[in-house]
Each structure stands twice: as structure tokens, then as C-alpha cells.
Length: 73
Image (cartoon, rainbow, N blue to C red):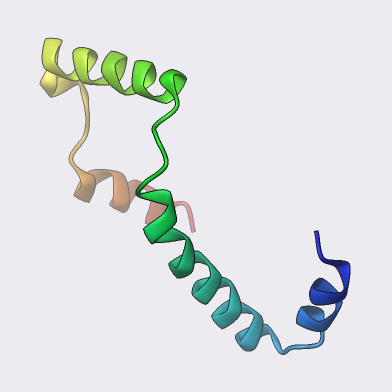
């Protein structure tokens, strides 16, 4: 890691650091799209899709999940 760069970033305000992180994250997208999916991730996705296919009613709609999460606040 470039410690000098990190040191400079720490001098920014919180809002500026958030903007910097967002800009860095956005710059990763084009490169990440070309990176192959690790086999372990592919296996996990296949397992979860098979579970969903076998019992689609076992999950919860996003709206319910979101409501439960918001109720935790």
C-alpha cells in the first residue's frame, strides 16, 4: 500500500474521503467485469440457486427484509 497516499487521504474531510472511496470503487468496475468469478463463488451461487429452485417460498421478498432491517434501528 502506498502509505504516503493514505496519509494524504486522511487529511481530507469525511465527505471528501467518501467521495474518494466512491471514485475509486467506480474505477474498479470496468476491470472487475473482466475478472473471472472464483470457482468457490460459482459453486456457492449454484447451491443457493438450487435451494431457491427447490423451495422458492422459503425466502422473503425484499420489502419484508428491508422492513425487518429498518425495525432494528
